[in-house]
Length: 311
Image (cartoon, rainbow, N blue to C red; front, top):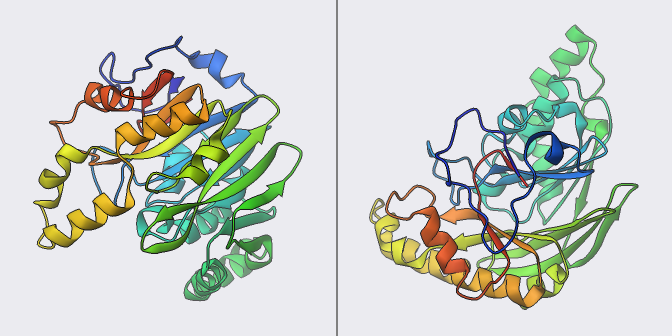
């Protein structure tokens, strides 16, 4: 496990329990398949403490980005992942804390030198979103092609809309499988499993307790699960005028840390990573409280996700 942040966290802020610590530094980097948490906060509101939901899996110097919350391109730069290495982008669902910078990531990667094909995967209306984004930014794109000699951007991007679970794609590095999860009222919503030669990683996306997710994650090494700390919801929603409706929505479409631990135990994963934390910036909710909640049912290693943490 490697902390790539330019900030230093207090000792013990990133904790594993129930298993050995993962390697840091050069040992972690030597692993063939790397997972970096780019953004670990839940919800669209910008925060100082964490970025919106995003993660990247790197295999043989190819980057597979899952979710594109606000600032994902800059987070990749902070993580020392060259933007031109992006090859595949996966959206779990169409909520702004997961898709706000989908188009920007492609556009900015191209501005940073991307000249190779990028495949994007996710629920409808992904094709329409992509088309409209390029139309909105056509002036800049066309100007840079003519003035800076860049390759045309639009032909590089190949969009694949997903409506059901099952096999998604396979290349020489990873095999990707999707499962439908339950995140009302957003339909469809997906979790993704990445099987590489050396490890299997599952990203839950946003979901309530999901048997489909448990099945998808069975036998995986790492499960990154979106989590809710239920006792803190009232403090979270007190900040907004729509508190009653927001609280009902959060409770109805997220998974408690306890149930995330239950899912990880049933799936038999080795490492549970708590991410998309809701609330993401409540000083009264400590890392140990997240861990204790998850370990109500889970006996493996638990990590409280931090931006730019490599696992």
